[in-house]
Length: 481
Image 1 (tube, rainbow, N blue to C red):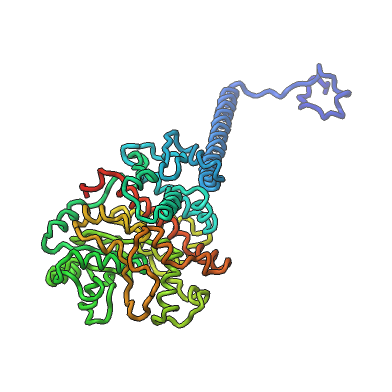
Image 2: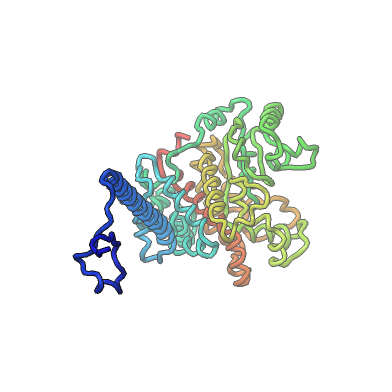
């Protein structure tokens, strides 16, 4: 046949010279098939376009999410790692609402919530949780350098002035150092204390009582003495304000977590007691606030408190088996962050959360502890007891406040101290003079170790101190509790 009569496909490249282009013939296809092919091609192109658009959207979403998470993480690192001179930029990316912590020497911080009418509780709670998320040494460094709660600056100025004047300051002099903050700067606002229970206790309603969470060596015996001076003898348990000594047949005292609310309420009512101290167990955050009670506690600087307990138990021979503070601390893991555990009431074995990667667990413990403290009607601080009279009178209704400036020590006959500190005439400076200074007593390594084992308690103590100071200097907080 002639070439023109043969239907050829496109020839291979090597044969192109043998086949002139004019002789190529494309195989024909019935015309009825072409619309279907064109439709299939269009559908394929549409699906491919949709797929590519979806892929782009997914990739963009992943990138945006990654940047958002990274930014949030950077904010936290920035908030808690800036040096002192840059502390005015804390939380800068989180809000544009700036507050000045007057008690902190005027350094500026940002209120993350931005809701000034709700007070500053959420703002300070966030700061405390951010600190708890850090390693212990980083948290302690931030507290020392930036003083985010304003209490360390105040304490230093207070001791300086008390020492200079050789007396306790007046309330007006206290306000010069720590003026009442604006509402959006106040940790104690919104006020969530149950004022009805406080009023019923002051009025002497039958069955109401004072629940005292006793933190050892933090002014608890002073507080019990205060109650003894203001409550009828018949309303006082015989053993250091702890009624369960009698309930247990003289076996245990200060173990109220082990008694149900019904048992506590019934026994307090039948006995007529009006104060119950809980010293050896945690505050049960799930049910103790349901008791018909007003709630009080007293704090002390954590390392001072720990060293005081060592002195009381070991140096003065009250059941301790060693006089070496290193050995004692190794054995007393129950005292590590004891404040935080007391007011968060975590599960057994929580000490593993105090260091390492358990960031969320530490933040949760801190949030629960602060929330618990915010509901306590009165939060005292041993170093500030000389200034507690206004709150004691207005909240508890106690009029004899002489115990606040009288040194009261438990079991003092077992080891008499002739140190001239039976009465505190210098306030916080007087407490300082009567206490062992951890920096003097402990070697450098032991000081660092014990401080880090108490890092969460350092945060919580600064929170408690600010609560006390705000309620002291803010006049709207005196007769409305």
